[in-house]
Image 1 (cartoon, rainbow, N blue to C red):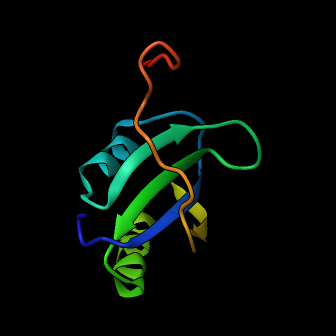
Image 2 (cartoon, helix red, strand yellow):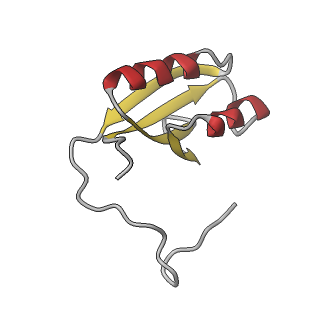
Length: 95
């Protein structure tokens, strides 16, 4: 266990669609476990894990400091019923 029990998903809306060099700097933030470009009413979804709500607030402040970030919606996981790595022979990884 990492000690980071606070799991959340952040929907990030940006000024443009697609990845940019500035947005990809998000990957350097240690709280960010996954970055997904998605369809729908948001541009990207981040899976983040941290220690507390205060850490979440600090992460959101860093996201909003990026000029391309327009807004966010956060979803906090209350319970996790299933979490597993990519299964060989079942899932494929795309870059």
